[in-house]
Length: 250
Ligand code: MN
Image (cartoon, rainbow, N blue to C red; front, top):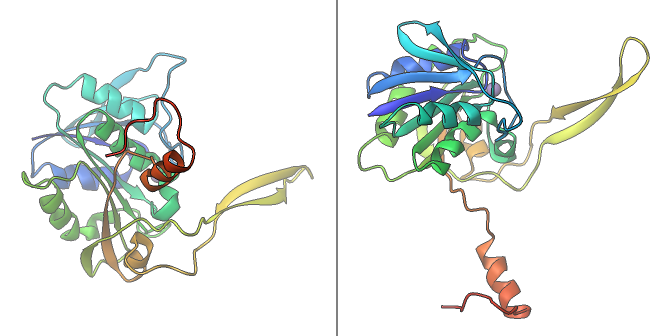
């Protein structure tokens, strides 16, 4: 197995090193990651200028730092490595749960893999501002990789989140009911108005969701798909307002 590792915290994040070490037990590892932090950049790609990649040192791993986004790193890394079949993105030092998935650069690395027909797994942890080396997530990290990298695991895109102190692992769905992003006005030291985009904790969580699992100390694994189509509403719209050229209903 050829495993490309990326992240959005930057190539020197301890979360990436933890992941690369664990992944190296499952196959050949190569690191292609942003040279500076790209958190919350979502699935942006760089199209108005060329990308450069430079060989760099991350322990004994073959590693390249890129002046681009996580999605750039995966597109570039996959194009330059024949036979790569798996992309692991993370471990992000911060959660990527519920609607935060829309902004996540970590998840974008895995989504880019899925767009290219590769397996993509995003991994994040809720620990923020504590011990920044998530090495203690072993052995749960190994268990997750064993499960998701297994030859029979037919899961092309999965979002994994680790709580601070994992107690177990469960399958979850994305918590979509509430959005936790807010814009808060403030003032800079010169008296000028500015605005912060902040995230507030979600109080009501629904059972079975990623958010619910992580709040209960469980590692959440959410299988995802790239198809954003609302198939039920599409069928409804076609039935109510048929248009010429609609695909025949089966
Ligand atoms: Mn990040």
